[in-house]
Amino acid sequence: MSIPARITARARRRLAALTSAVVLGATLAACSSSAGSTGSGPTGGSGGQSNVTLAFGFQTADYPALLEASGLFKDLPYKLETPVISGPAAQISALYSKATDVGLVGENTAAFEAANANEDWSKTGPKIYTIGGVSAKDAPYPAPSLFVRKSANIKTLQDLKGKSISYNFGGNIYAGYVKVLAQAGLTVHDIKPVQLPDNQAAAAAFVAGQVDAVVTGYAQIKRVVDSGEAVRLATNEDLGIAGGAGFITRADVLKDPGKLSAIRDFFSRFSKFYSDWYPNNEAAVEKVYQDVQKQTPELAKINWENGAKSRLYKVGDPSFIARQQAIVDAAYAAGGVKHKRNVSVVFNPIIDPQSVPR
Image: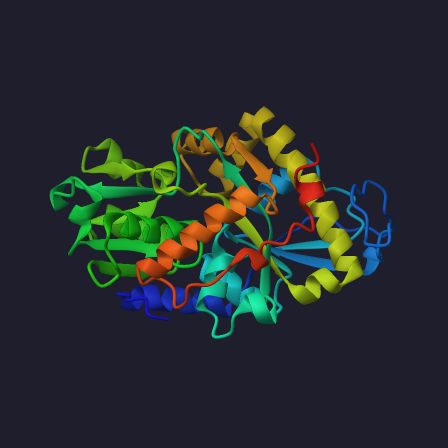
């Protein structure tokens, strides 16, 4: 694909390590009984869930720890594996290789894959689907946002011309990146793009002063913002994106009655995790961030405050799909994807009833 990138040798080694190895998280629970299952298979039963293994890829180790701490994923009628795979690109690779069944990426990831595919998925059928997502509307620290270093003298989006911007490909960070360019009337050829394996690496490059701008979240670059070295120039809402995470899977997974039943059960619990447990258990959440991610108490609180606003959403919502199409169209205009495609086909509402039951 025609996306310029300036990646350091260290970043290349890190990306190779991420895409060639799956770091396993906790296997949360498994049992042969269907007790506690809140989902149902396509035929109304468990779909033989006692023999089912669902591999759900997360990008950071706090997710499996938080799921376990919530107690909502005990006594599962299937085996749940939670590999930790950093970055959307590595998550996509794991899904295509069938190392995972579901992966946490960005809400736009499957749409970007469709826009870069050689064949038109609206005619041939998608290779991957977005089946769910979570976003934090009205979060106190909106992400992804565009941050710029004061020394770069960037006052408007148009001032990004000729400047270096770090980002990672495949998810909501990339959506923010291409919308920044489109709104500025720029393309990838008008700037110095620095594509890195994941959000953490992109933010680190900005903090280190290696780039002029970055698309990321406040928590990742807090030090340079608080010191006055950097400022936020645009939020996700300014750019017209929800900034949510998305969950992708393959067609063969959805055709497997046992795995589909397990996915439905998982998202029934996951919905309660965000709507009920997470916002009401600040201390437990912050303890996970501090113990697992080694975050300071201040940073853990910031992440909890953002996460407390998170809720699952329906991917079959026509207005949501229209926003995703607008993002892909902007990416095409900015030279960030290969084709101008109808991407509505990748948003599969098969688990909307479990994700948003009320």
